[in-house]
Image 1 (cartoon, rainbow, N blue to C red):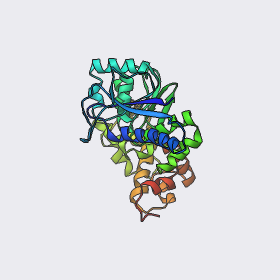
Image 2 (image 1 turned 90 degrees about the vertical axis):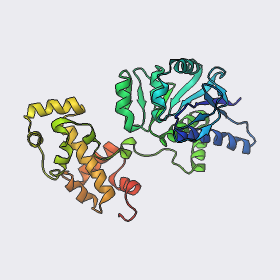
Image 3 (image 1 turned 135 degrees about the horizontal axis):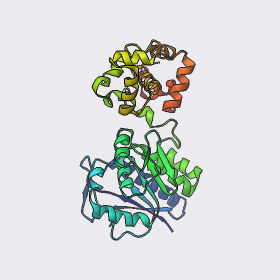
Image 4 (image 1 turned 180 degrees about the horizontal axis):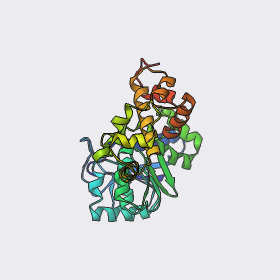
Length: 325
């Protein structure tokens, strides 16, 4: 008997979150039919009513069933979208979703669908992934969750969550692998021309020098000031002097605003500046390392890979200009 997959749609959902998951599960069933085997999945779109639902970019989908009529599901999928933060304010909808979730073997969120997952109380004291851009907002909104802003996806018991957009594909393939095995999940990945398991984490996709938008007051321009001196051996006293603070006050204010120590923040800026140089310049890796203040290329490569999940050379291949070598 086919496993029931339900994808919840609501006004302002992200179409890619829905269609990527839908295509992966239906591809598995198409392959089974071609081999004269029963389809492993039956996928349906679920909504509050049977009315057409308009997505964030204007695409309209028709649901197959409503929250009130859906029966037991193998997986309930909660896609993201700009409408997710409004949806969680509607108690009647979240109550109905909670009922469906309790009748589901697994519940999975994609991207900012994590806000819905958290609002249902399903991520209490669990790790949960979301798009890196919304990780801080999610953590502030639901402090009892443990937001993992780097993971492509997180599996915690029967609760699953993924990072932004395409990470939903990684998660869907993981769910299929659990059901049908690694070989079939790999075949589906090949058919869809994607990696079965991507290297790295979400950090490699985040914006370089994101720290500058998270600081204010005297620290507002700290990253810009430090970039001018990154090639030097910068000490905490030097950093405090740049923003006209005592060392003690600087440490305390930095921790209050960023939850990082001076050492952690400096490495973050060095690595994010390296991201930018790898994409926009033709400097060799050794030159990038020196420009960012690392003692050697080996140390730089180890720290870059630890932070972003991929070595600098791979990062440049993925995001750099085609004429960069």
